[in-house]
Every structure is written in structure tokens, then in C-alpha cells.
Amino acid sequence: MARFGLGALKNLLGGNKQRKHEVSSPATPKAPHPSTGQAAVVTPPTGKTSIVAKESPVVSITPAAPVSRKIPEGAKKILFVCTGNIARSASAQYLAQSMVPSDSPWIFDSAGTGAVVGSPVASHIDKELERRGVPYLGHQAKQINTRLLAESELVLVMERAHLDWIVQEWPQYRSKVRLLREMSRLREGAGRRSDPISYMKQHDSEPLAKDDIADPYRRGAKAAQKAVKEIEESLEVIIAWLGYEK
Image: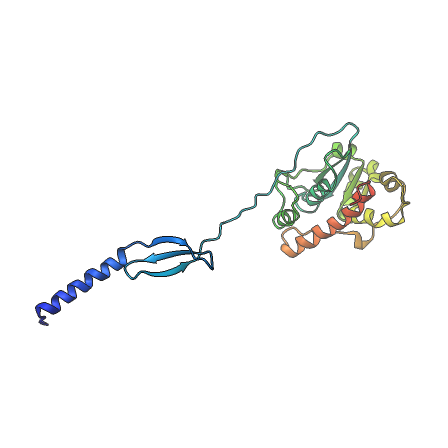
């Protein structure tokens, strides 16, 4: 067993007390550092000043719901259709709605040929809408039906398969149904002052393979980005044709 003199024992005990004091003493906040603007603290017992970075505030962006508006008398509806009504047609509805003023007589709706009834906007599609500042919350997917077709001036679908299915089920509405990109493409051949609805109903054409907008559902962020971009580009042409130039 080691032997200690009285002096050594006092020094040992004194050192332990000092270290205990150093650990337990709280830091004292001081004014921000004049050059960095960061908070400075003095830590006893040394009196040395150290710079402690402030934590950045956490900013969260909550997606907005579309602003409900009173439907004007004589309003005209355009219905967008895809398969599940949670990706392509849903994004078309809210993008189009954001491109016209609140007092516009044009209203927009969407549905699916095999809708995931009651579901919200699909993952990744929601991020694309948020990035553009387009409200979409509250969306609930719904199935296309006779009422929706009857009350719509125009039905814009995302691919040829949707057109064929609708025409098979409701052949009487064939003149109303067009592919979204087909309508955008045909705008180039229409007269400057032509009414878009009349032109689309009277003009005889067949959709092209390039008019299809691929389904991005469950295919990741890049597929969603591509689909929403194609829809947005087509809508910019169509909405301008309706009389709302940028």
C-alpha cells in the first residue's frame, strides 16, 4: 500500500475539489461577438471566451389547400382524366386552377378511369406542386362517371388508353374527349381567334404516340418531375388559348 505525506494528501484532495468545480460550473452567456455576431460564453474558472454557434431556426412549409371560390353563373368546366386520379389528372387540375384568376368562368376538375377513390395526391407529385406554390390539399380521388362527363365542356386525358376506355363506355361523348398534349399541339393549327372548345369538338384528328404522358405513379421523383413538367407546358398553351395570356 502506497504511503503519502500530509502535504501530498492535501494537494491531491485540493486538486479533486478544483476539478469538480470546473465540471459543475455552468457557462455564463455574454453579448454576441462583435465580428461574427455569434453568442459568446465565459466558462469559469478559466475566464476564457469561446464562440458557440447559434442553432438555425427550423422552417417548415405547410402545403395549402386550394382556395374555394364561388362558381360563377355560366361557368364552363374542363375535366382532366388519368388512371388513379392522384398524379397526372390531379396535378393538371390544380395547375390549371392556379393559372386563371379567381373570377374566371373556367373551372377545372379531375377523375380517374380506375380511381384510387378518396386518396390524396401521390407522393412526389405533391412535392412538384409545392415547389411551384400550387395549392392541392384536400384532394380526394374520384371515379369518372356520366354526370362528370355530361357537365364538362371538354375532357382532357393523359394517354390514348384513357380516350379509348371513355369512348367505349360513353360513345356519345367522343367529341368532348382529347389528349391534353394533343390539344396543346393542335393549337398551332387553330386560328388566332378560334374558340378552343368549338375547335376541339369540330376538328377531326387522331392522337399521336408522342401525345401520351407516362404514368409517374410509384416510379420515383424523376418520373413525377417529368410528368408534371409536360402537363404544365401543355397547360400554358391551353390556358392562353382560353384567353389568359401571361
